[in-house]
Image 1 (cartoon, one colour):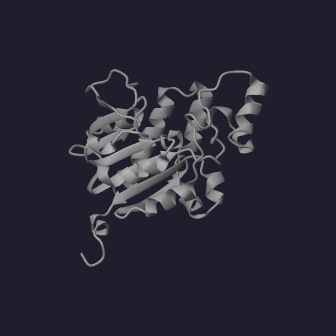
Image 2 (spheres, rainbow, N blue to C red):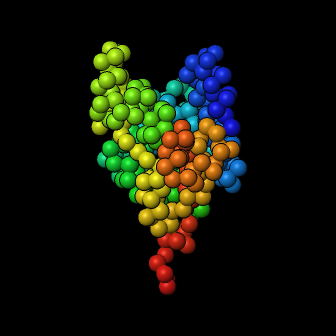
Image 3 (tube, helix red, strand yellow):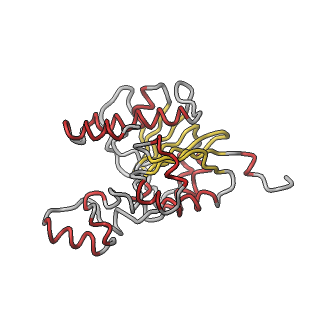
Amino acid sequence: MIIHHLIRHHLSHGADAGFYALQARDAIRWLREGGVRIGPGVNALDLGCGSGVLGLELQREGCDVLFADAHNWLPDARPQPVFRSIDIDRDDLGTLGTFDLVICSNVLEHLREPARLIGALGSLLRDGGHVYLSWTNWLSPWGGHDFSPFHYLGPRLGPRLFDRLHQRPRQLKPGENLFVTHIGRTLRQIRRHRGLKVRRMAPRYYTGFAWIMRLPLVREFLAWNAALLIGRDPAQDRAPGD
């Protein structure tokens, strides 16, 4: 469980590079606990990479990483990151290739059509590959991001009241670059796709309380950030009788 380390670090240093590195290393720990191989010989995709914190940690572990996003916000690093520009909402993700591991961290809630991404996951995975999908679900305490907790008043009234009270600019705007997502709906979308299987799920920052994710409705409020480990099972790709 990392939540207490994150709180302590944030109180002392704010949301600096060390804060996000803590999250990345903990995500890798959780993946390894779930049986995901990470290291040399692993071909990984950091999809919607942003500044590439998680992908760069995978690179340090020896993975061969492709970074992909609409814009390149990657820092100078060694080895030099390999970047592909792609709009996840509109472009064909299949052009990126296939991978042993796909990382998609804190992206889903910023997509206008999250189901489109979920539908493309199988085409990005090699046999036996895995996806790490994490995002901030709408009803969690941080669901509104920079106007939380006003999001509990809804995606229209919440930001309007926040703006009136605080009178400072917001980076995230519902319906433009922030969208309502729910854990239950996302799980149902994944399970509709043959060959994809949710192998593990937990609240990202307190993975020891994974049981929360088995409680419909409760998980929507108590999972601050949802983390799913999704596997590709080629046997399920075949129709019955094949």
